[in-house]
Length: 282
Ligand SMILES: [Zn+2]
Image (cartoon, rainbow, N blue to C red):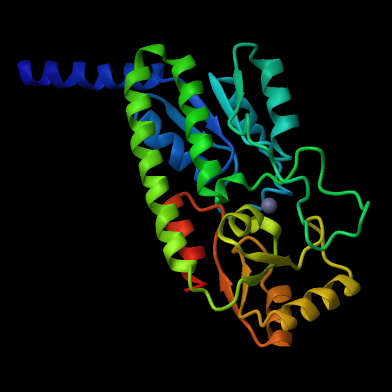
């Protein structure tokens, strides 16, 4: 009987503890990985973008908005879908704290830098949002995430900071590994379907040619230019992602004699994601 009573209390206790956990929203799975590492089980983390969805066309469900209205904290990244969503959630929940984890990060002004005509309008005022694909910027996101979690749960500050230090060391290790992997890359230009990899390219000395134009299907003229540039640079790799159609990448690859590789820039396991992109250039 005593055991049973103890068990019942245990179940009630954990249900209460669970119910009391603050809900923290993140936008994309790579942010989930980072926030989990720092917060541990102190919070319940929800990710807005479901696996396999395209972040540039994603529209949140009514259920997500309702859940967001129960949340304590939203960690935003500057993606298009966040603004209307967070605005609606804040109307329902005045206590929702919205903290940009891209704070202090200077974003690339152009979504697709290399193939822009001078003066052509670019990809929105927010700049290139793919900052998690640069280890140095991901480390900055770790710091901003830690600050936000500390504001939410001040008693956890020492734990969060210690975990942040650990995660920053892991990010630095991945960065060193990538540098080693790409140091002797025979070709320093690659083609990507979507312009996810501009920060990655910048950090590791690559030139990125992208098939998409401002997140849209490319004009024929643009494709011709990408193919010509890729041929001139002897490009061997065309990178696409599981949430985009494979055929534009295949068409370009065929024209230039390159191979198509699929890397998911939105996968949760950030070290695995970074190792996957780096391994294409060994
Ligand atoms: Zn994107």
